[in-house]
Image 1 (cartoon, rainbow, N blue to C red):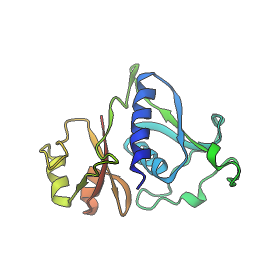
Image 2: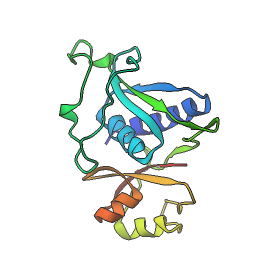
Image 3: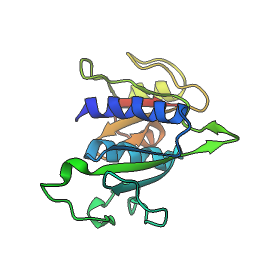
Image 4: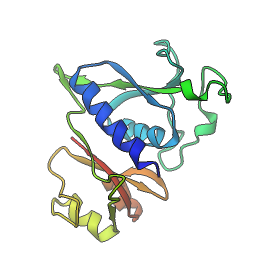
Length: 174
């Protein structure tokens, strides 16, 4: 997995949230798309849309999976056809959420880094979800979420426990 793009996305989203931006963009790649859809399912961001170098129009349809278990990204609505000439200009546009003038996405911290990939087994995830540390991963506090890359996509730790899968720990969000 392109863990460096996930680490860059984490720092960018945290900075955009602290700067109180309503809309921000990330490079359009499958790793950023899967993380953005997982953040949207968890309620940290308000919208995810594909677009070009300029933000999409306010009425454009959202890019969301048909079901959380198996996102069908091929049926997603896209404003322009992606060719080899314009692929580098394609962006993911994310709408950030705020509640009572405070960002919903306060802290987004990458756990795995390119120099150290952190994986967690099912038993480790159970300990972390209950608030106890397991290996390099600290236990979750109230209001925190931990996102994993599994063979079933990017899942939050509670979803991974329901489906009984472990995986690569991407980031923690509060």
